[in-house]
Length: 437
Image: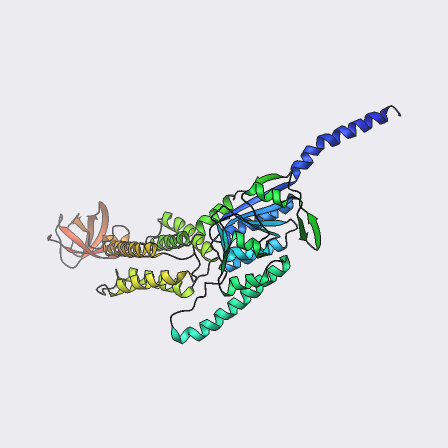
């Protein structure tokens, strides 16, 4: 038994030595990168990235940020995830030339560590989606609403600044006066914690730094941590594509026209299936955006008017009215002035013209199809011609469409006479002589 003890100690020591590299590798820094407007796709990517970092017990999460701003709801989702995270979060405005404007400033203030690369800037955090309208009668209401939004935003960012021990006075100025700061001045004014040239420099400066987390102070150890870049998965990429207002707008229109074509031509199936999928994807993307229902209603009215032009002789009044309603509705559809969330005229005008041409084409095709003579079924027999098979005084037999039919006539008909069907009564046809046209 005594001889086995040294062996057991040696085995345990060897096991611990072999385990040390794996323990060191287990401590990782996860890097999430966001470029462009903050929206549902970026919020989903960041929130799920933080959840994964917590699940894998990451040592630190770094958010590389370059944004002109974004939606308030998406921004607050990200901030709530950061505030609730048991893993420290460092938001890093990167690369050089990047910015953390508007919503990006709030995210920077909410993070445990705020860092910037040289030649970057932050600020201009005034809410802009509720800019005053040009209608003077609505100006007092708009001003009141704007003041409420600004006061709320100022209180929100001041609370974040006080929580992280940063410059609360400048944060409030960024909201009320839309001021901005470059990285060097932000560091001097205690708006950010440090300036780093790249990710390696950031991790080097963070090593040994103390961070308050859940009421306790922890010391960061990033010297031997492995860096893992987390790329957006298929869901985040799909949300990013259909979350673009222009793509969502086109998907919704394709869905509407697909269903319209399917209803006009029952049984085609393909337009209905594709239209239903496109409409659902478009509506899914639109539900996460600030949609004006008045704009959506105007768009639908415009489509109805353009289609009605082919059925009602209005000498272009319905069609022109439909185009005007469609364009106005498209302009009003996205109820915000946030960068990256508007519908440009270069998209609206061509889509309106294509929609008008498509509506006229589909409606005229349906109208011509309705006016064509019936070629199948019982109704097709009315107007058809045939040959009598025997002398007919009142009733006899005739061949119509290569079939024998019982026919009735008000005048006598000799055998071999050419007849025309006037009506059908069950299995008996009413006929009359036909001399041709």
